[in-house]
Length: 269
Ligand SMILES: [Zn+2]
Ligand SMILES: [Zn+2]
Picture 1: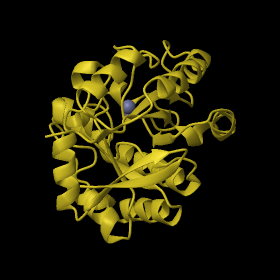
Picture 2: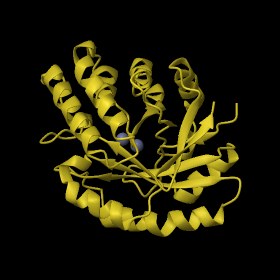
Picture 3: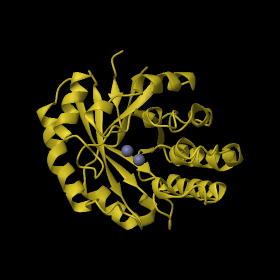
Picture 4: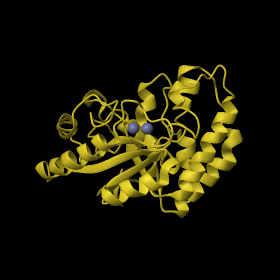
């Protein structure tokens, strides 16, 4: 199957990226992808990764991506994107970044909750998992209500570690009320969600979020859904997109969004 889009990927502009921007673009073109986004990490808040250099990331993207857009313009569209982590933990800096950079596409993600490290580092054998999840969803709600991004990134991300790595099954039914409020706030603000297929390549083995949340977003009136592999190297580019499209169809979607200059365009699936 031709992969039509991949709207969430990283290159060496991210502290954890493995392939250069040009290599990623080259691979996307070889795969026949028409809409391809590089969305390198800008993580804000109390616990930035020690390898993360804000200025180098922002300026690197500003130098490289518009030039690559020009170089490969034609049948292929490169989106100048960004994955903003924990934006509500530093709204002032976020506003500044958004006003100074001409992004096509902004993913609003939460990798850690206020006062806690990235979910990657937490000890779930010791932690109060339901309380951590409650705080996580509270911060997603705050982010959704703030709404200065295009789609909310990988909802249910902590399950990658809680369930995938530590084998602790988390019961999300108790969070149904707040998940509805998050989705309603996104819809009210004209914002979307993404299907992030990286979990399929990890121990977790599922997408972020599961199909039931995608379906619920649609039932509540949501229309803006993107799909991304969250690849950090050329080998993972496009992986799981076909499964993501199948899940989107199952949830009732007939169109997937891509973005130019922060405006959604819809591609039939
Ligand atoms: Zn992320
Ligand atoms: Zn990512």
